[in-house]
Length: 178
Image 1 (cartoon, rainbow, N blue to C red):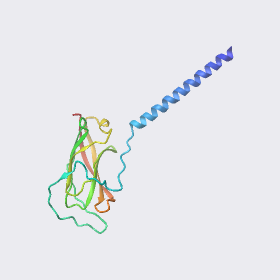
Image 2 (cartoon, rainbow, N blue to C red):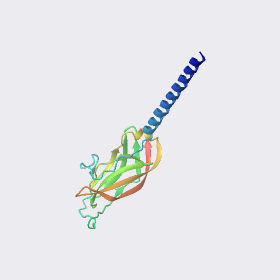
Image 3 (tube, rainbow, N blue to C red):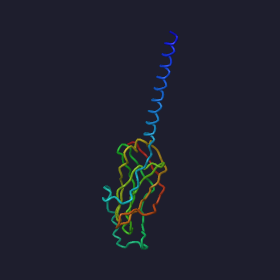
Image 4 (cartoon, one colour):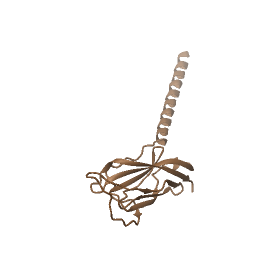
């Protein structure tokens, strides 16, 4: 009889250990998904289609910047303030690739190493003033102010290959709920 009791007790202890191990595994997996800050990959080639929000700047300057052989030359126009409206899942900004640039661009907004949005291709002579946020990023942001940065990726206009250099521009981001 004593032996039967020990068997039941041992069975209960093993069962409790298995349940505890499962609970720890499930919580680790769910925390990993909630904290996934993997940014989208930076494309090696410019997206084929221009950004859907791109609009002409209206600068009719046909003169291009001088460009060294095998290199590029760019000019940027931007505002240092970005406003995110969580209810609309959109960012309001000013970023332009002036006509005199010799490179296409892709713009990312990054806060705390998390890419909040990534534009499509911006050809010279175009700007964006609104951009959809990447899926799931709005829920990570509380209302208030953030230090962020624009990461500007450059692409050769003919080959579409990404340039070896990028630009980071500090910006202030204000998040509103509606």
